[in-house]
Length: 313
Image (cartoon, rainbow, N blue to C red; front, side, top):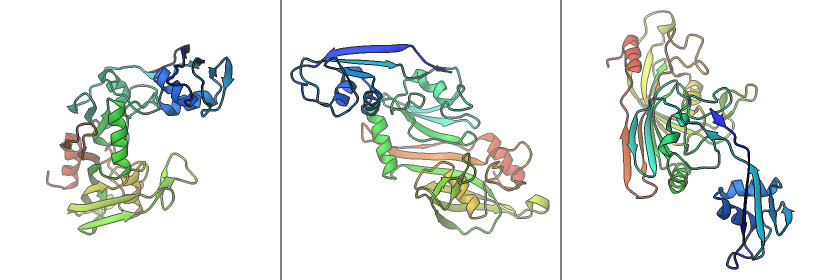
């Protein structure tokens, strides 16, 4: 569940040393808000300085003036008892092996029962969105595997920076429809919101997206929907757009097995789940500088599914 509290009023006097500072910076320092949240509060007319309502974040506050901030408290996330395997934890980071079927954070249609609800009691923080504390990257609901979250603002900023620099190693295992793929390949095509269906993503428009893949094994089908066979891939993300792997593999004619959004009409056996698992995650610890690398074994349900398709598991 997402909770909303009543209005909150905070006030403080500006010291001589801080006189002349920007209003948004003082609001951030005085309340503990992030800088961007403080800027929004000023622009929305929720801040007084020197007895007057100020709406310019760059307003320079004089020493001795009183700053008053009155806002409706940001929504928080209620902790829930949801089992999630923890792979690594310290004062700054949390790495988990997300189960399939678990949405990462609350949102439309999923106000509770998410990964964030499961982990908020472990101290995940970071970022400006109160319903996504500590979330620096995501996995789709039906994708299982490794996910890192921050437990300090320093760690959050460091992980976001590594992601923007494309230095985080993210490797997935996937089974796709069809065979005949090359031993290795790269899909370099932008990914953006579908122009006709905003719930989907599409290749060929939007932001730059690059996906690399390596063929591990292929099996031939013998009849009906199996006639094209199946291929198991190791997939490495260079960028991280929404649904990137699923969109890119579908775009080259090999959608992920049992993908209900981007697969073919017979994209998987009845009851099968999306065959996609984040099996490896590596990055530099954003606080200590230590290289970290984690592995998550393929879940039993995916192994059983692969065996049923003819792969040796």
